[in-house]
Image (cartoon, rainbow, N blue to C red; front, side):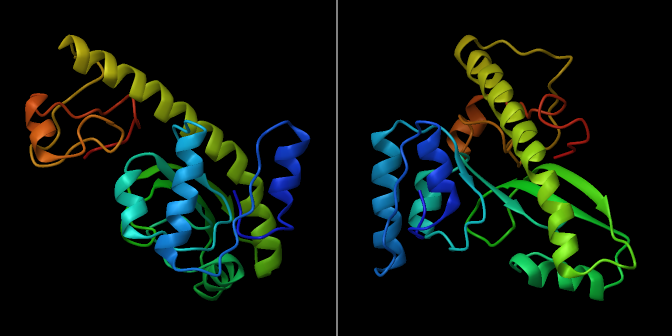
Length: 212
């Protein structure tokens, strides 16, 4: 789905037999997002990927699809959050950073503030320009998305099984903080559900370094 009729992603999707849609964006953000949401429901989509998506999602859309939207950002968040495209890479160079990369994160109602799933890094050389740095970072994004999708799918399958059976694999789960829920868990999106699962928070399955 794109708001640009000539977006290459639409051509690529069609060449692989994947339904592709252009949605004209001369409407309110909420109206646009409702149209996108209707298409997503029509195709029973389970996970939404924002790739080069330069629109800020409405709060209504984010709430409806909570924990089902992944975004890629061209920096190592939380550094350089809020920027887009070349302005991010210019900011990295201007700040004298020695490394940068990309971040795959859950989308919440903030801008680039959702829980981080995967980060991939590359060096920043003295000869780099915003354009060359963009190329380096983009080369990391595909593998980062594949890794993030794999983690989410594996983790959701385990979480759904455990919630359904009441069983927990103690070697891979740990209650890390009573007042927070695991960002990977599709069944713990509100306080009532969170409290009903004995405050188990997923740790090593999601990220080896996740500490809540």
